Length: 404
Image (cartoon, rainbow, N blue to C red; front, side, top):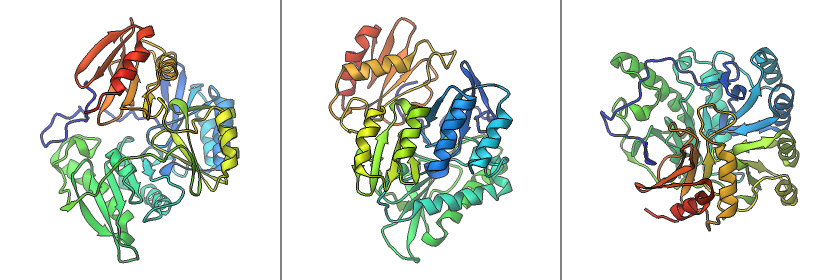
């Protein structure tokens, strides 16, 4: 699989979706090589300080003591005992993190995380959309991978190519409009701003109804781009730019190395907040209202607090020892490479994979670093080189300087 976007043209080959959707959740645990894994959905990436602390306590009491963030702003707990499901559910329910046992896997909502806000209150949208999903019996038919994105008009999460995306328009007031984008369509539907969330819910149901009527199998709209009419409104620019790290107007922004934090680091993050945390799809966290004087303590705790380093745009799958299919401890190898070879401004995105599945890889242009068992295969723009672990850092740095 080359480092390019998935096919989007009508009739393009789609994965076989005849099998059951096995996406993990808070109640449906996934068995990994390092124990069971639970994925806790956080619509809009929103957490209160109390909820963040509850996750750290659960990680220590039931898992391996770490908290992972995902590319959808959710949280994963790893190393869980196979019989801890009931205890975990009780903890999550008490913290307000499990409002619906029947719908918990379909609460996949990302939202623009900026503390200063944009053209719409996407936090209110996220809460309304979450409540609407949980109240809709039909929504249980959605895949656990089906994604909603709520963009405040800055074009950040809209670039993630979610299944259903709302983009706040430039016109203010109750009579304003929003854009409703379906999958990776290049045009959108204009919908009333006041009814934008209802329109997003209706689009998801329209997707399920159309699938049933057509007899086709799909988990994502991108797999069947000809299924629904996309609309006629051209999309605005979608830069897909995450919040810069450091002090922001109205709060702080920090990054987690490969999205993972120890329970102690997680408590430090919660302690620096002003009551609310917003986990981002870029495996970071925005702390609205947090004081800039908290930044040095977060840096000392191991969080990324400065932009413009080789870590910008870098990601990796779980690798060994958490995944038996992996051929290497990719996160350890990747961290060493990123610390050794500087790439000003980060360069192209890069993703390390322990096997051919390339779990968690980004869309668009990226450097593919694949474990081979004898080292790594580095691919960019169809150019491939096999390297040893010792040669990998410089090979990756050189590939990231490539521009398309």
